[in-house]
Image 1 (cartoon, rainbow over the protein chains, first blue to last red):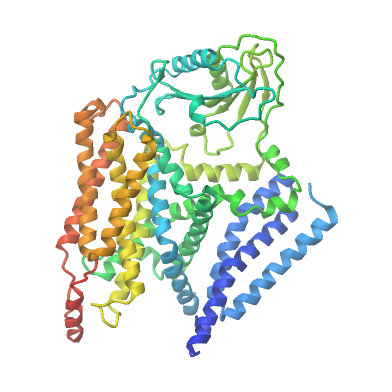
Image 2: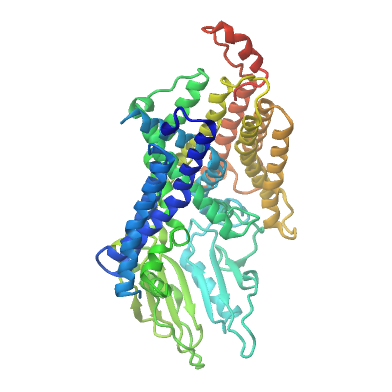
Length: 102
Length: 528
């Protein structure tokens, strides 16, 4: 909201659409990818890491939604969440392709 | 905290709260009532006597099943206690060779063993279980859709709570502030008080609510680690080895002896008993600890040989993360809570309900004065205002009607249990229609008044028409007495609110005389 202070109405609306997309589908995707990465990276038994990662993912989901509206602009929210999802995606992909699944 | 961040979160709080607020209201109301699910299960079957000797009831359940379902594949028995209407039993018949396993209705294969140890017939009702299921399955729609809707609303709730905390400048000062009769300020104070007062509860119940649905909402950690997710299920919910029937008949051990032994070994009351291959030499009895006796829902279990009564297996201790998840689900359901803690759960649930309701009303109160023409609000405003009336005023009325239907529908009626629930939705639909057609202020007063009257009279009806009226239960059956008293109190509360709403005259601001005329005009469509 703060980024679109003196912008035209359609720009404001576009900014809001970007934030909503960032908050809901992207936020969920980022949380899911972190769940994948954490499930692969956390120490201990696989079942334990799986459950712990799932428990933590909801906090990430909420944080992503809050960040989407706190970011200076909709675009910034959008691409920063893309980066925040790319990191765990890479970790998860590398880990699964190296050691496989149960 | 910088100003921009707080403003952005205030915006997020408003809209995430509004859009799913109505669903959250329903979920909060049903969930709050569901803390008394077991109590309502008994309250809604007033013809049943209270269980005094659980072991005698269990022996009766075994006698009944040996007579009725001796060749079954398995039996399930919920351990009777003073808190339950009796021992609920159901059995799975052996699949006949050459016949595909049919999914017969469970109703043909279940019974309720009452306090006398004999099967009893009570009025057909879903009891408190309805509120428990409605809390996450809603009604009249596929369960999976309902759970996604509720899950999404819960996530919005978490976001609304967290952004609500950020929005607050003076969270502790606001907690002690309640300015009465000051219009918008009072609504805000009421919203803040119920929100901050119950904040630890609201955060806990929201996050743990997500955890109860985690297998559906967030399956990706499982997908990342398991190509075959049943391997995880086997680890998290271990089962003893399955035994095959030998076709050599052998008498089943006395289940009460097993129950006593299990209670001694576990050091806690037991909850469920499952018997596989009853009457066969390979019979097996699995007993699990009562979920009300511990925080985590991952209750320990023991398996016994069904002919010798020896312990053959015990569930391994779950890992730290599994216990954490189990404890979170346990915290959410509150099965472990004793009478005092349960009352606190209930009060916190009411605080949450009021928080959601006052937040929804606040949205309209805040915007009413800024409307270009308060006498003719725009469509979005009217929609929110009327949906508020329909949901906040209508749903409790529906519940009151359902409780009356539980008392008044003929006991022999076909599909009686389902009709109790139809009554809830019919009354609610009527209330919603009224909310669309008439002025909000009239409808608020009418709905609150009707809800209050229905609830307040109900305990008196119980007194006259059942043997479980108030003087008979006080001191002897605290749960039933407590439910009647709570209904009476809620009824009086609703009546008081109805009177206040009907008498309410919106304040005219004297400090801004130029607006006074407009505000006075708005009095025709007054603040709730």
